[in-house]
Length: 366
Image (cartoon, rainbow, N blue to C red; front, top):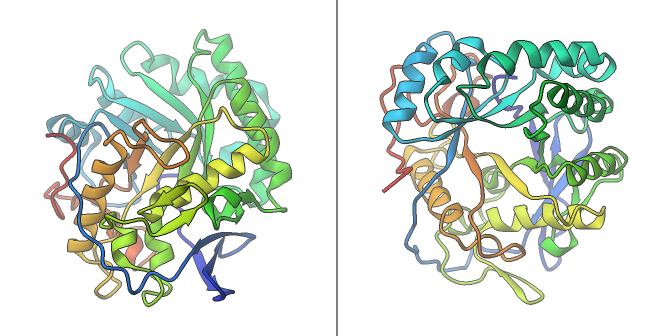
């Protein structure tokens, strides 16, 4: 899928000590993002670092520039990692010889065929990986995007297994196969050490995590502090959501959290640990902030602050409190404003307008 599924709902269900945020796909089951009351905190901006971060290249628009110009733009900005939601051959052609590493996604609607027909997976690899493999570095293959929970989820692990088998047969078994999930997979997230998968998705997630651990592959997770914030600004500090706190906001045993991004990420790590996924690393496959269509929250200024602080944080070497001391591989959502997405903020997550002028400046490198 060339874009991010958005339908999230946040429901406050308990205000006794902390606020629970029920985060779920609008048409199916849910998970939880939870925070204590942060409205009275006085937070101070901390210095940012910079380094390598990727970007999501969505194509849900009828006015976007051709891929050859887009890849040239990425090279000019020294962006060395990109995520494609499906194997667009024009984009793959343009990526050849660019030095840009690629997360290559499959269409959600292909998951059933990929999972039930090994020959379909072989053909997918032969068509979309092999022709480009000598000149493009495929960082991961992602089977679908945010299909847990949904009716497609049952096809996910078989699709991942068949893709891995097809890659191995084609002498590209070194390419990890994963999938991208939203935080709708979480049933509990506060405090982060108590993070766990929902009862609904646990039977799906556990064997997927086993597969990832066995193949030394990461779990791709779409992490959006923005969606937690928009539900109740009185109870959540904008500073905590936008990496502008210098003091600990959430205390979880010996661990202290200064931003919601880390708290969400560590809640997923806790969930992984509870199902034997201690060795599985999280790659943040999406994170971003819209620049319009939601009053004084979705503004160019807030989006610029969030994404620049995000890049500085994930490349600053601090990691998260649970997994400290290393950079966090992260992909900013998204490269362009995409005019065929649902009306509202969905059309305004881009760093660039379709004419390739900046919506605001993001410093990927120094």
